[in-house]
View 1: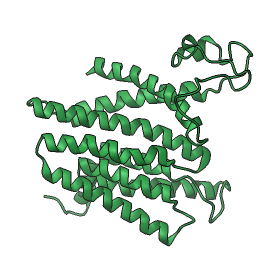
View 2: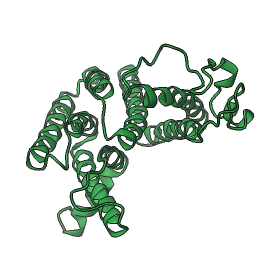
View 3: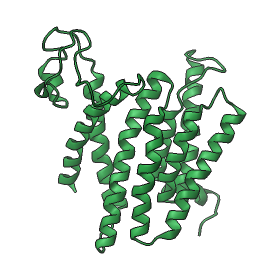
View 4: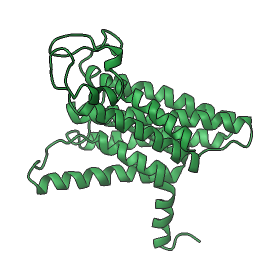
Length: 275
């Protein structure tokens, strides 16, 4: 388990380097593939040896090699955070989700792992973009329906778990509908970007189970509400102030994915609703 997690962590740091590009360029409507990355001050293209995740920032002492322009610590932090996220997903998946009883189960598990690694990557990108711009770009959210649906749907088809496939589709539609209603009732508090992201998260959570879906949905509102209360108490926001809700949707979804089943069981046991 250690070596695969380490390998995925290193791979995640490489993805994190790419996410830095995505976070900067997608909200600006720029291509993520061209032109090559360059220093924003002197325009000098960044060489491959100056674009090694984490190491280059340290070796350059957080400055452009050519003009000395400071390089934000956010770049290596995103690379490190993505690497840690990928390693954590690998460990969680190995402990809770990995099944390899036969070739079909092995293939399905690989597809699921790829899907949740993808979710980890877009979670980081979307959270940062929402914090920066109060937007959840369609360029990232909408393709996630196709990518997540195909990967997770194929996993269900391969194992012939038709109920899981149906629940996944219903869960995605249900969470989309819930957020859509909330957006209609409170358009200042909920943007349509949140609604579209809700459908994606509903697909992923419902694939894991109803408990994960319900806990993930509730956790998003709980975490977002607590954050809003803290902002009000500290005077950093007023009633009616808009706050980015995407990061809390994503955090709640991951809580639901990882701890949804035991959290739901604990909640039900407190009210004597389980055997």
